[in-house]
Length: 103
Image (cartoon, rainbow, N blue to C red; front, side, top):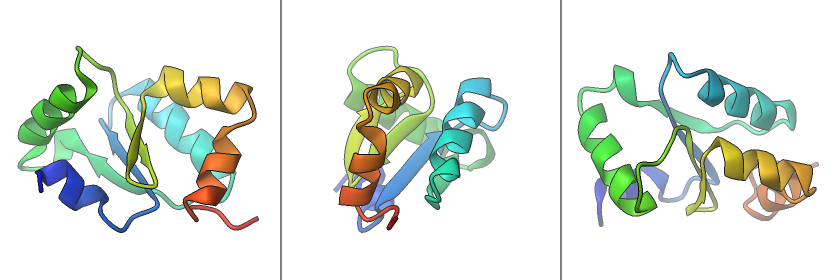
């Protein structure tokens, strides 16, 4: 099991973020507005943050952007993917299915 899998295991909602990233802040604010309490890892504040960032880039398969959002242990993507799901009305459904929100 890789470090990312260990950090997302048994958690309905995980966000890998950077504390100075405005898109990270926007996505965290959007998701919390639905009542979700995400497990957030601020990569720039963790001793192994650079290693985790490299792992995430490998998983994403391109020079990805942050945040990296996992819902139900599945990588959903970054800000564009989360916003797209929200605009299509699918984000809340995914959060409910993963038991990240109840209402």
